[in-house]
Amino acid sequence: MCEVLSVGIKNYYKYRNILDSDYQSYLLIKETFDSSKKTYGYRRIADDLRDRIGLIMNYKKVLRIMRKYGIQAEYIRNIKFNYMKKYQEENVRDDLLKRNFNQRGWVTDVTYLIFGNKRAYLSTILDLKTRKAISYIISRKNDNKLVMDTLNLAIGKTKDLNGIVLHSDQGTPYLSTEYRTICESNGILISMSRRGTPLDNAVIESFHSILKKETLYNNDIKNLDEYIQSVLDWLEFYNTSRRKQKK
Image (cartoon, rainbow, N blue to C red; front, side):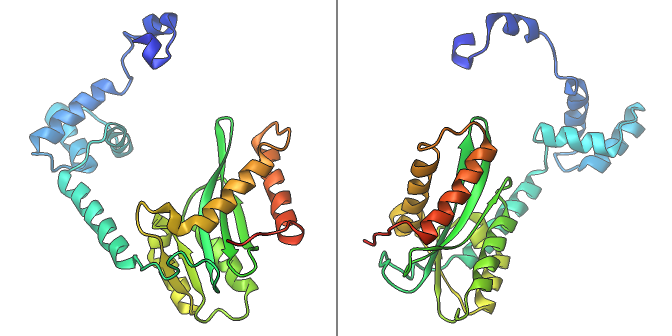
């Protein structure tokens, strides 16, 4: 078992009998949750523990342990899932490019920049006509803000946006209402790859692949900060000097 889990034998015997410090509290919380027919939230559980057995446990601790052990009313799980699924389905758009990448339009995606056990995220919008990266941002967080900032940067650099196609995959930020609103209010037509069909987004996928090959593997990089700087230098070189080929 130690070999499968990559755990040293000494560490295994050292920690195998040590219980999680939250475990006993978890058992009490779980018992109360189950006895409520799995309907109580953290406030009711804390109140019940106080009134029933005289145990004072503050709301924040109960909430933390419930999150830690995944205790949540099933109907809440369903509401969250159905809400997310509903608004994502409403924001899915057809593939307007249909793999014709020699037309007026933009393609976009977010890719990982990984060095050791650390990572950053690069969001890029690429112009199909010029093959230039018209906007790009690197962040330590992969969130909606990263995508919206990249989009707003591209919008600010472009005079004529009306009717331009912006193509992406069906990642969560691209399915957000904020993304749709920004695009539609600026006359941008949203286009999306079909699920499980990376070739629909081949240009930006290829671009990010080349970027990684010519930065991470062509330089003696010692840490993530150096990797990020190498990527920024390469993007400047790509936009100003590197010869581009269209397929």
